[in-house]
Length: 99
Image (cartoon, rainbow, N blue to C red; front, side):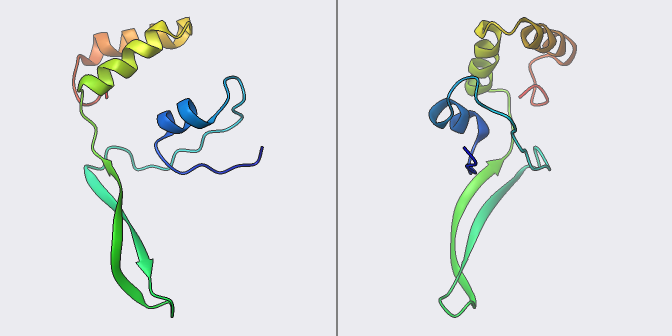
């Protein structure tokens, strides 16, 4: 209770969150900015440091991972979500907007 998780929401939900226990998921736009984001560090005195690590890539593409996630929603038992995604895929096709 009252925990903040940092990371990819699908991974966090699958690996760290009990089913039927989520009250809020906060997603911070922009989405699909086609950019890589890094975490920057500061030195002990608070001065800027060259140290950084890659946090995430915000580039979406319709690939095997997206297809797998799509299939998981269809098999999830959530008929409304499955119907909506089928309609979106029918309209948009298999392209990066669907990812």
